[in-house]
Length: 458
Image 1 (tube, helix red, strand yellow):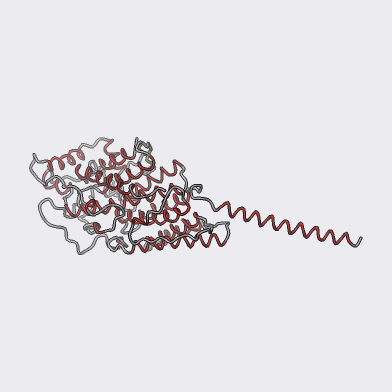
Image 2 (tube, helix red, strand yellow):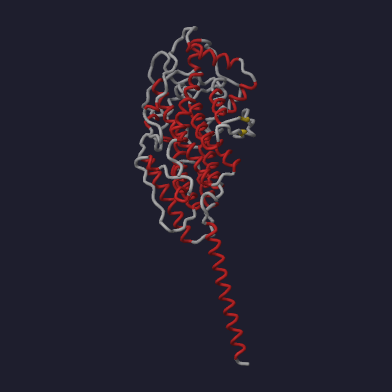
């Protein structure tokens, strides 16, 4: 009888010990289950960081088209370099960029790549947007915390976060070595630039006469294109003769804007991005398009980040090429040519919505040739087509629900169709000649192809 209570006590002890072992095993299992390959992780984290980026750049002072495109490129490049050690499909592209040295993972050690990506996006967003409002800084912190609550092994989490931070630091330090591009949001209309004077040369335009935007952007470092590829073909020779090809370019803009159909008006307003605080700028528009595709196709994290990075690098490079060419040729805008040569009272004006300056007739403050919208569209369309196919049909919902302009969704048979319509939209809007749009597209397609040729795949 004395032995029985002792046996009961030992039995209870063994049960308790067995329970502890089961709990520990369950926790270990849960931890290992969360350490997934990037091909099995949802793209939700990348999509949410891109959505926040799109919202912030719309209100961020100084983040005009090429500046935003460059920030997208470095931000997504950091995320991409974080995931490639775990990817069976994609390899690092850092060896293509002299001076960019990406830290390595610790061999044989487990990593949680979602945590690492979260750390990289967080650091890059904080680094590129130090000047934004407190509410947006809080939004960055909140999104970071949304993906930081991980029930995984503490050592794995710490190691993963450190890796993401190390990669982001390396990429941002690489950005710092690009003197012309880094922190350009602080100096995008430099006071020391004087636009060349001469017949047919661009000067600040009616009615706001804004100073030249990013006249030195051609010096910014590119990822895939060379110096020769940063120069557009010669534009049509300037002339005021009514029989000259240049006059025909100006006359087309004049005739189109004064006899707009409802379809032309819709197209013009649908693609009229770059209205500060109202819409994202034209490079970001294509990130928004890419995001729709990523979400529609439900691609995994690795393909989502691959998509965003490839599109971003294409947008950044073509922004450099386009702005470089703008300030080589310095072609005056249609508003100046038409008011001087055809109709002194002409104003590019779709409607009387004064809250929407570009739609109400304000031309962007830089030379006409080539078109930035067209260049961005061509580059992104080529990058997206290479990933999702040259006959990928989609409906663009970027401006669905807007009431300030015609943002109703439009459907397209391919990304190239989207790029062509985006380019054409600048004519009925009254801010570009046809030659601007055609050359912008050509440069965009060519730039996208060069980015596609980087050694992305294993």
